[in-house]
Structure formats: C-alpha cells, structure tokens
Amino acid sequence: MHLVVLPGDGIGPEICAATRSVLDLLNEKLALGLTFETHEIGLVTLARDGTTFPKTARNAAMAADGIVLGPISHADYPPKTECGINVSGDLRLSLDLYANIRPSRSRDGLPFWGRTPMDLVIVRENTEGFYADRSMHMGPGEFMPTPDMALAVRKITAQACNRIARAAFDMAMARRRHVTAVHKANVLRVSDGLFLREVRAVAADYPDVVYDEQLVDSMTAMLVRDAQRFDVVVTTNMYGDILSDEAAELSGSLGLAGSINTGERHCMAQAQHGSAPDIAGQDLANPVSLILSAGLLLDWLGRRHGHQHLSHAGALIESVTDSLVAQSETRTADLGGNAGTRRFTEAFRAEIIARL
Image (cartoon, rainbow, N blue to C red; front, top):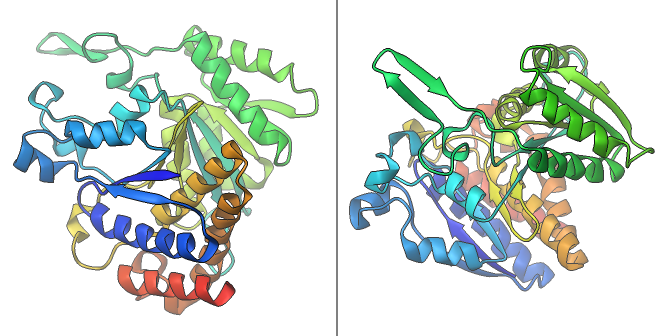
C-alpha cells in the first residue's frame, strides 16, 4: 500500500511528522508493506511555486492507495482563480470522497462534558450541501446580485443522499444496529425532505437496524443530555460538520477526533481540527487526531483489501491512544497535561514497542 503524506500548514508538518513516526514503527514491527511519499502543499508552495496545490502533489495523491492530509489554512489562501486551491475540498470532489466518517467516544481518565458517556459515529455527506465550492458546476455557490445582497445555493441530490445513507446503515450493521438521521425538514421541506425520502428508502432495506430521526437543533441538545442513545448518525454536510465538532469536544477534546473521507476506491485521513497557526512550531500540538485518523485509514485499507494486519494496526493505534490519554503524564496541554508533541509521540512509540 502506497500512502501520500501532505503536511499542510500551521501545526500540520508537526503532527504529520508524529503520525509518520507511528506509521513507520508499525510498518516495521507488523510488516505492513507500506510505502510513503511526502509532498509540500499550502502556504509554503504558494510562496515557492505560486500555487497551494502543485500538480506533482495532486497527481501523487490521486494515484495513491491512501492519503494523510495535515490541517490547512485555506481561509488564508487567495481565491482559486489565483491558485489558492483548498486541497481538502479539491481531493474530496476529485476522488469522490462522499463519506466523512467521524467517530466520537468517551475515554477513561478524561472528563466527559455531557451528561452521559458517548460512543457514536457521525456519517456526514461530503460532496454537496451549503459548501460553496461543492454546489455549482461553474462558479461558487455563493454570489452577490448587489453589493448589499448575498445569496447561497444549497445542493441536495437523491444520489448523494442515498449513498451516504447506505454507508451509514452498513456501518451500523457492524456496530449496535441503530441509525439516526438528522435534518431540518420542518423548515427546509424540499431539500431536507429529499434527504429524508432517500434515507427512509434505504432504511427499508435494513430491517435489522433500528431507524429514527432527529431535528438538528434538538440533536445539538441531545448530544449534551443523552449522547449514549446514539450509535450511527447520518446527516448532510453542514449539519455533520457542526455536530461532529460538538461531539468531539463533549467526548474530551477536538484534539482526539479522528476523521476519514472515503469513497468507493479512495480514502483520505484528515485531522478534524484546524491548522492552529498560533501554536505552530512550538511543540505544543496534540497529534492524536491525525494519528487516530491514520489508524482509521489503515482499517479501511485492511477491510477493503482483505489485509487483516492493516486492520490490526488500526485497532492498536486506538488502544494505545486510550492508554496514553488515561495517564496525566502523557497528556498534551489541550487535555490538561504537560507533554509536548515530540514527548507524546515518543510515548506512543514506546507503548507500541512494549506491546509488540
């Protein structure tokens, strides 16, 4: 399996280095057969090459078995017409990575900020919705007819709703067999109505899965009040983006939030948080989100290609994370500890060695 690493901006190079260090060790100890290729992107290449996503990096990512993408500062990029390409959005569309999979669960030793423990997965549609770069064939989905009027187009298609629903139900079959669809069809009757129509049609094909629905505003409250009632949550792009950040923070920290973007043939690991330029280069960043995302990528590759050793490596990353965040001396600052990026990574590698 060939993986392409795109370090990104801000803390991206630091947490990508930490993730690569963990993957290198697992590759050596478990004979995973991984090969790696790293390409710079973002603000570094904008200054050097005049684009945030050079063709060599893009071609390598498109040809890879898997991608590890560090956080990017796309809000600081120039417009796309001036080569300020949002690497994450570009790859999601180009590779048709329609499912953004974001697990959140409580971990021993860390406070849970809601009223009940959590163990759920948010399955977010990734290719349409209110996101301006994913709504139109030509031009962005936001426009201004006059200087004092801004309009946004939300695209919802039956095909995208159907396939994200199927991804959620397939995942639920391997978990606790419960899917919750989150929507706002009482107001957005046409677009969210279409989403619900397709999810309900898919639900009929899975009689062994309990299916229910929740309004997005009440869902934000229920994550605080009774998160343990949820298993797999399926929703549209913007709702899923917001709810997954809420769930991650409630379960301990956004720094613990693994995330992958998957399609029929490709998978990209990506930290759920941003590039945090204010702490870049200071050995303060928590690398767990990207390390866990890489573990999810390994598991996806293992299941897709029938390589159990890759799935075993993914499960080991999850287990080692549990052990380290349960101990105050190996927690990073966002978790109330004093460990820096490098010290945490060293502890992660030492725990892997001790287990193997």
